[in-house]
Length: 168
Image 1 (tube, rainbow, N blue to C red):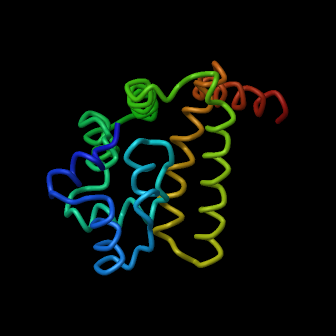
Image 2 (image 1 turned 30 degrees about the vertical axis):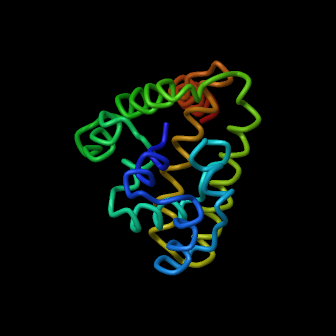
């Protein structure tokens, strides 16, 4: 669960006040109703919106998104983490947020597609930071999609590797 409402309330702001402040200080055009949807998790903010909200509140994006400390710590220590450990941490994070469900398959597929669009934009604009961020997001969305479909992404990779050896 994200911390958008919690942080806004701790600052004593209404949705209307926040929308006005974000327009003035962060040049983020957003309506109060849109902010409310983000808070209720009826709609997911775009990456740029997460960053501007985090900048406005002066907190890390991961904190604002409500990422469990364990996942944030794992992501921050990826140099010492195996792919399998990262894979497991992402699944645990998604399960804690009730994001994994066969009912969510279409929605999760759309998130994968959205991230593919983001990476294409980053490549076209030669924006290395956007490409790097999109690659990470694609990996996370694919892992969750695989779980929704009752696949293990690691098994899918191993299956592909076996297939390569047979075709070589």
